[in-house]
Length: 86
Image (cartoon, rainbow, N blue to C red; front, side):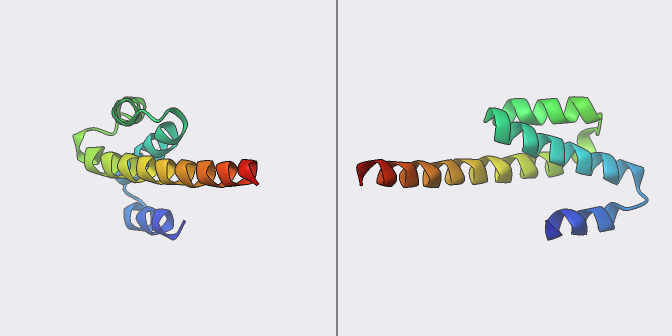
């Protein structure tokens, strides 16, 4: 959570920066739930109306959240499989 706090501190007082942060968090949340990266980017950009300046931050947060979700799901599946065979 330090990264989110650092980003918030960097953009504090800048309304466009806060909108970009909200867009990044919306995109990360949507991709973690739906596992549809492109749709998550579009939803986040449209819902927050952040504009093209916020797109790189939204895209990066969606990519990181998507990869983390896939890795955590794979690890969880391996643990469930190991538990069921013993």
